[in-house]
Image 1: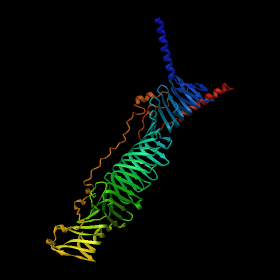
Image 2 (image 1 turned 90 degrees about the vertical axis):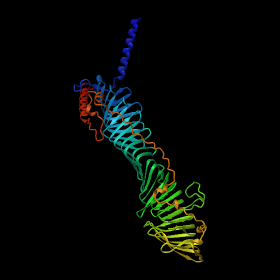
Image 3 (image 1 turned 45 degrees about the horizontal axis):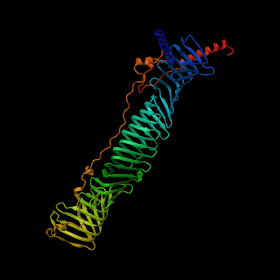
Image 4 (image 1 turned 120 degrees about the vertical axis):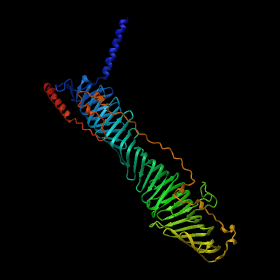
Length: 598
């Protein structure tokens, strides 16, 4: 009984070993085969009506002619080669060879590998079935459902359905072209990850990044590291950029800059939205607009900035806690409106009681402008500039105009009325006209600065002349009523006109005052794009690469090396193919002569 059991075990072990050997042995079907002394140990196979067919562990290969080394589990396939693995991978080429022991394949000559979503075309392709990876280094083209991708070097990971491209990577789409040095592309989703200097160019935009993601089918992207979007007359930069081509929309986050090349202006902040079709930009989180005017810059800050219109009709709007600063002027308001074409700037208080607590939200806080020791306030202030010289031409204050000039020694010169018009020359105010219900309170001094007295005067209209931003002369017209009194006859409570509100402590004296007292925004944490993990070389070390090849392969161990960025593949198979074709032709001739009926 024990002997019987022992023999049964030996039998099943032997059967299992035989079955395993059969599973690893290449099977074949052919119409005609022969042997030739030039190919010792090989069968020369050729097509008569059906192609030569090889089968091995889930892969099928068809060809017109083949050289099969059965004892070495290796074959070379020639002419109309077709290879199929399962239902998801198929390949065509002029030549292919396959090592059944290492499951390593090589194809050349008009190679075309097809997957459900992509087709790869190249001159030479290496395929490692154990790794489930394919590799080319002689230039390749991948045809996707939406685009065509080309590169000098490429590696395909079947399990992840991912292509890794190196050197001269290009995606061509009817709407845009992508250029990169390194890219990972997932064919199932159409997602592309770019590493290193990369551009996406279209008729309307050019995107640059040094690390980014782009959905080639959904036409959306996310870009980090030195990223920017160039429009025709506008450039958007930021720590991270989002782009949606179908909606003509882009957004920028953290340290953003919107550069308007047509109007020589720059807007910075920490969040921006760009709507290209509407020619509009919204900037929040410490937005700051700056524009160059006669070798001087005008800065505008607010809670929110909105820029609309094409370059020739560009309009800037600022909302809540607006502050502006120029070397010779500064101001504050609830809102601001700037029409660059017309050269008009309006400082407005939209709400009498603003919702947001700002520096002008207290009752009676109106738009204000300071220039030197002068302060102007009113319900609305309008500045008109010469669009050619970019210099201030005039300034208008509508309703409740109030001009305060701080006396160099003591007190405040005050002028009020319903409307005020300021006239400028070389960006300096030299005359002011005030109309309707005007009142003045003026400190009259001698040439040596000694106080003569204080005058309080009513009139219909006033003209004021300035020199070096100080009041030089005052002229009163129609219905003048007033007198000059000594200082001691003017009680302090009477030295302020009704509505007096000196706000000199708010005056901006330097650029940094644009954000004085404002809470610094908390920047959003940017989700970066990780660099790809460094992969092992496709061929491995030299010793490993030798093991991939059969001694009868037309490849040499030195052919199996991962290409550098400058390498190109120079493998040739024409001579080898011609020799085999000549041998098969001779064998076929002999067969026909010996079997004339066939």
